Length: 342
Ligand code: BMA
Image 1 (cartoon, rainbow, N blue to C red):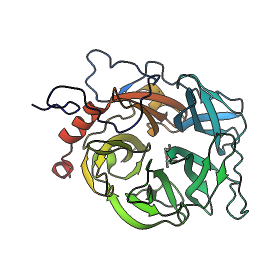
Image 2 (image 1 turned 180 degrees about the vertical axis):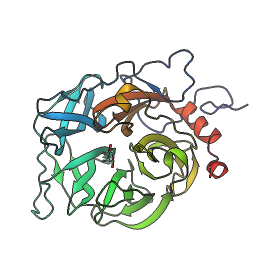
Image 3 (image 1 turned 90 degrees about the horizontal axis):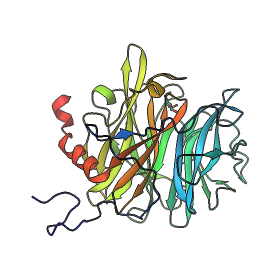
Image 4 (image 1 turned 135 degrees about the vertical axis):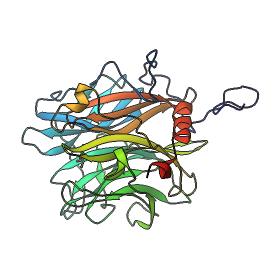
């Protein structure tokens, strides 16, 4: 039988279309672990008080940079304002975070960020890094900025009208256009929400909106939102996303995964009925908001298929988990019968 990830001659075929990252943070799956995603033994890798002003550090975005890693971190201050800060690391596990929040450069005072910024994603496209985040503009919407060096951040137009959250760019133009997933929302703790796809010729005007995925059942019954930047694979775009169950004790955030068509990413090829990770460890179940795992970034090593997933735990700390691309794709395909459980 042809194994996913191998060709007929049993030569290893690369499933991830992307670069090598030999120094990816990595721990082998523990013996006897039956899960498709497994946690770092070092979790939480970033404590809530890594910088003096922080109440909590979570839901953050990491990218390979120079010979190490950098990222944009959600640090909620002790006055309880959600702010974005730059972090640096040589190994992706031990981090230094700048105690000063990012001061976005903007020549338009009407959209310049003054208020909160949270749940960042960082995406390399063409020649620069784009940051998207939940930005305050008469309520939550998708803020967009770019940087070349993680020193200067140039804020550009908000992508959408309020209210919207979880704006996640694709790492290359699709059909000649920038492409973004998002989740239209409300002002508060939105009790609904599907994932949509939009495209733009210039990162300013967004349109041709398409529906991608709806809420279904169980862990993803209340709302869903795109997580890390989708990973291009030979089997389609690999999307890790969060889903919310409304329990008698409030919202519970888990994560699943889907494969989207490469040329028409609003077409879902398969999607996990079970979650791939849910709040089970103490650092996911106990914190400022209990029972939350919230992935915002992955880094990957294409030749080995290793994926490291950065996620927030209980709106309090940053955690790391791992997956192997072929195993994850197999899991999605084998566990994809959403209609059966609906
Ligand atoms: C969502 C966002 C996330 C947060 C989650 C759980 O609405 O605000 O930042 O992790 O709620 O509180």
